[in-house]
Image (cartoon, rainbow, N blue to C red; front, top):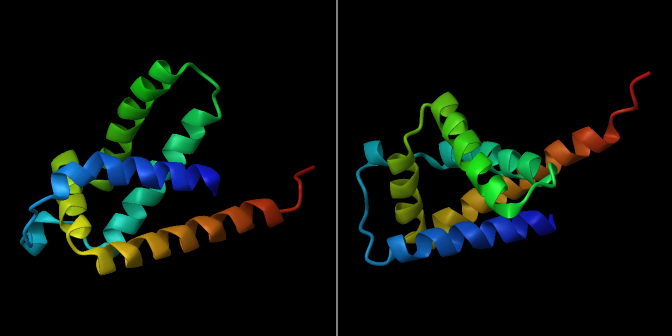
Length: 121
């Protein structure tokens, strides 16, 4: 959960400059809340996998960019659409709060599933 907070702060800082002056975007140019949650789950899990590799930071950042591109391709989400979506939701904090609440709940549920599974023999 600590890492999630760090990641959340990273995204907030990364996109906060972009959100200044953001206007309401047309619906077809932004991801729905459900799509944002689903995409952020995959991005977060990708980041966690890279952190578990214990590789130098610059190598991790390079690998994350490559893997994140593949995640977005698998989701059929363009990087520019994800950025526009962040801009929109940063300008609409109540909606952003709903997204992050759903994200935290989903990640906690996944963690509970993983930790509650009996060890394989």
